[in-house]
Length: 324
Ligand SMILES: Cc1ncc(C[n+]2csc(CCOP(=O)(O)OP(=O)(O)O)c2C)c(N)n1
Image (cartoon, rainbow, N blue to C red; front, side):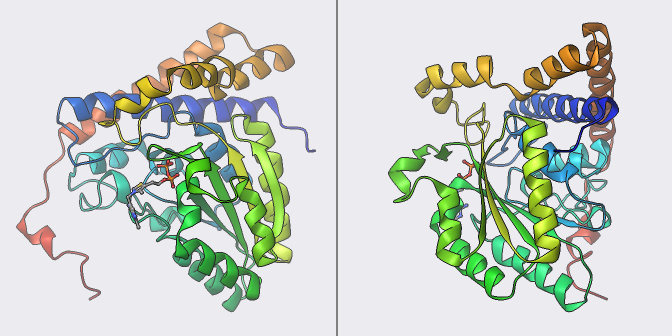
């Protein structure tokens, strides 16, 4: 395994804190009705999976995910200001205010979104990967998949297709143990989800501790190297979401209070990384607090920017709808 430098680890810590603070603020803004819409899906608890995975690819590579997309957009380098503006449906938002929380996308960052239909982005991932092969680039695609999405037809079709054409896709199942509120063992005949790889002849990179950013990075890096040369791989990252399915779903927190407590107290990704920085790299609390303060400032600036941004006007209704 490659040695990860202190600076890289500090940058991963910065990213984790930025995502957590950004989304904590989004939760407040949703309650204040500054962010509206039926759902707002937070990534809190999953951060190490996204950061470790995306650290293993390059800018020219591609990323696609479902609706739990805020953190991945930030990791990919999309600025907090247009992201927050998109949350509020403002014209300055990264998707022009038309997408909202579930449809963040940025062509410039090869971040292809943000999809609300469960599993609907998997065929798109396969399509992007096919374009990479067709155009003889050696780019790869990382496709994040919720555990709940492994039981619909898109999953079967896309994984099968990717293996037939040896497409450069790293399929990453983010197994947070539930699909909305349904336990994985109540929804899956085979609850050890990486074993599905065998059904399609795909290289199985098994389970990884999704709360440990270094472990995720190393496993996904192995997958990326294989995918660039050979074809698809499947990884199952074991993680946990701290909030309900969406922020308005509060029942989940109560139902699984003991489980949640265990994950927060013993498997919290920010704490795991902070401990590594302190014990192996001599970083002190003061340095870590300074990072938190910087990220809080970035988040507050993004909120100001979004609140002061204009709403879309009538002309925006047809802008970017058709190619000119
Ligand atoms: C095709 C389709 N069926 C149902 C839904 C409603 N729905 C939204 S999220 C979800 C569960 C998804 O679970 P999972 O993939 O595990 O994601 P996570 O728990 O991380 O939200 C369902 C059934 C939908 N959006 N699309």
